[in-house]
Amino acid sequence: MTTYCDLLITGAAGQLGRTLMTQAKALGLNAVGVDVAEMPLDSREAIETMVQKVRPSFVMHCGAITNVDGCEAEPLVAYRINGMATAWVAEAAARVDAGMVYVSTDFVFDGTLEGTPYPVDSAIKPLSVYGASKRIGEEAVLAHGRDDFYVIRTSWVFGPGGKNFPRAILNRARAGGALKVVTDQVGRPTMTHDLAEAMLDVFKLKPAGGIYHAANEGQCSWHQFAVDTLAAAGMKNIDVGVQTAADLNLPAARPAWSVLDTDKLATVRGKHLPHYLDALARHVPLDEAAQADAAATPGGASSSQLRGKQY
Image 1: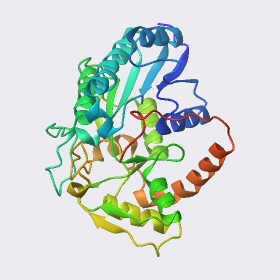
Image 2: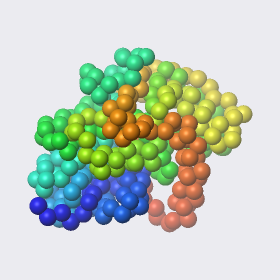
Image 3: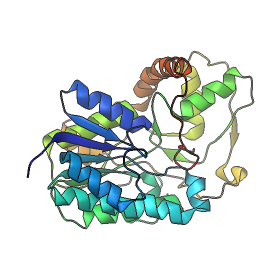
């Protein structure tokens, strides 16, 4: 079939999508980015029409609803966008013989494998609507059985621009607000720049289809991540209080342990993603610059309540 572009990137207005677009273009790839305005994910017809129009050789499906508690409040919306729409994207990609990467999450696990990183074939047991809706998306992609269809699970994503955990910590610290962060949830932070590079490597290397895990090396609690963020910004003197997940009493349960085993993807690429501390050191100045650019741009794009990442 005729291919009109190398990549179709959904969720292109989000943190990961923007980074993918930038990196793809730097590699000389012809990438088309779409978001809600160009291809609303609640419309099967809109998805089919866009994919037929641009006829990509590969689809990077980053579009999703990621507000964990918002998904708990509006499960039908979560299942439609994260689950059903992913099935529609997959079927549209298959119809034009395009490969596909679907970005999934550590929230498909229940967190009981404490002390051992989750292998790609670990038992699935989501604790939340968000995790369950993303699992439905995984199943829709894998059901095609194509060797060029991939599910890439990641965790604790942060990156310059948009809403991210390090910025939330730094903004609160600079405003003089008290900081209390959860100690009993452990995972692997993942910078968008490193995740995007890994996804593009999958596109270039074309390994066997299936599930891969991509996250920065190292592991930490949210509390330690906050402490490390302050240190990266030269604010080591700020005290960070402690609390448990139960103290927050949030609507959606989070896995207490969601460290992903990334060896399968590292074997394909010949390297792991950098350590999260290295990523954090790169992130802080880049995010400061992104904030300055956003402040200088009137009417910049904003995320809806459900689409905005929630920690």
